[in-house]
Image 1 (cartoon, rainbow over the protein chains, first blue to last red):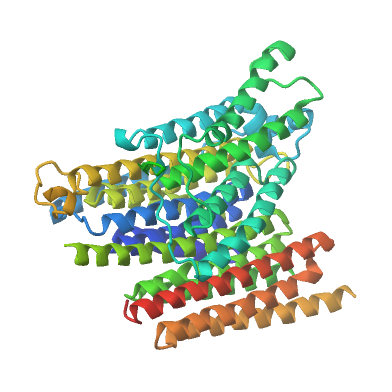
Image 2 (tube, rainbow over the protein chains, first blue to last red):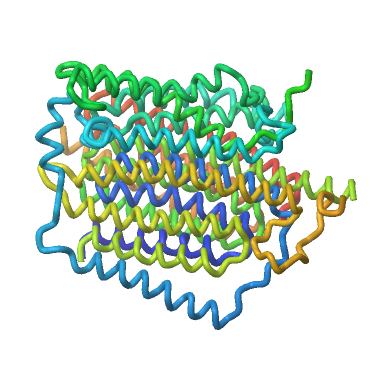
Length: 313
Length: 95
Length: 113
Length: 97
């Protein structure tokens, strides 16, 4: 038993305990806090699995952004608790048994690996040099499976459209109902003045370093979104109405540039989303910069929720 | 050196674990809010020690994001709690 | 048992926890939370698949890792959508329950008017 | 020279780990939220500071060292402000809230 495995066992026990408590605790507020802690801890687990890119994403989205989103909902739902009957004990027991069976099935799949473990790592490494990138995960995201990445951006925009379309007709195109922490003299104002400049530097750094080392547009965009939300929550910047032109432009600039370069690839490199030889890296960096902005705006607006009031004029 | 740093990371993780249990088990909500701050310092220390132990500098970036988002989450905690208070008092006052 | 297997097993357990919470907890918000827990458990299992396929000097297979990154972002978008739906349900009906045969939800201002 | 650096690292990291221990004891034992908050931040920031100090000789290059120090500064600043916010919540709703 080495120190290393003791560390991993401790981490797993902690994650399982906190994970179970998100299900078990009575209060929704406590459950969401446990979930945020769980997300932050999980990023350490991803580091232990040598997936630093995933660890960055999990720390940013799993911990920070999802928690922020849910905490906003907890505050509103607290007063309107429907008196849902708790599921009866026999049902809970049988559900427990079934879930245990499913977990056991997954565990068996883990414990009995295939004889020859399939891997695409050599194929990625062989072709990575052509793209000029140093980070294999970025290579996969922007070259090997670029279509996935493009469609994921479309999913983000579709989800945002879905959220917006939940607004009543009277406030369509209005201002999202993000709750503002309305205390102008508070220390939060100070934090909201101090942290965003640092956050923007971190976002640019993440986006820049993503070509060579773990990082990239997702992580950078999430940091931007968080900083934007922080400034809006502190009341330093008004929440924009969703019909603003600049907002919508920023939202689509990333996917549009990605798509344009992809279509240009059909002419210049004989395939959709292929990059002409020698120009791969600059094109990918351009796409990443545009995507960082779009992801930041999309995630921020998703967290801000559907419009709830129209601009007063 | 690597095994010493691993040991230190394990020790700090244990301390963070005890702290988290202490903080999350208490009934008061203000105690729960400390959880993010606890991970903001403890989790960052664990990650920096791991980065030193495995000589993987990118892990330092994870620590950077963890610090940033722990602060963000703590702000969300406090804001949510104050929101609840306002809604409760509005409901009580407005009928 | 190596570290990857350990994390894989915990991923399986977390998926089980999440599924249990999703089925048994009546509150919609807690269901969304449980669904996220289920998701992270599955991602963890997938991460182990990646870790085991380490080759060519990499710590893991980058293809599953890239897919997990995509999945995390999409899960966030789905969560945002689900929460917006629950809040809209609250706005419309004054209740936040999913059961149709339980009209006895707490009345709010909106529900009375 | 390397040995001196290693000894320095071991000393500083151990001292940092000790402060984490102290912080946890404080969290477990202190009677009210404000004192627990004190234990959490003062001690932990010192702990993290010593850990960072200890890791500096192991960092490769001055850029990595600078990054380590700036992470510590970030945690210091955000920690101080977040603690203030939580303390405000404590004062507003009382220690039982």
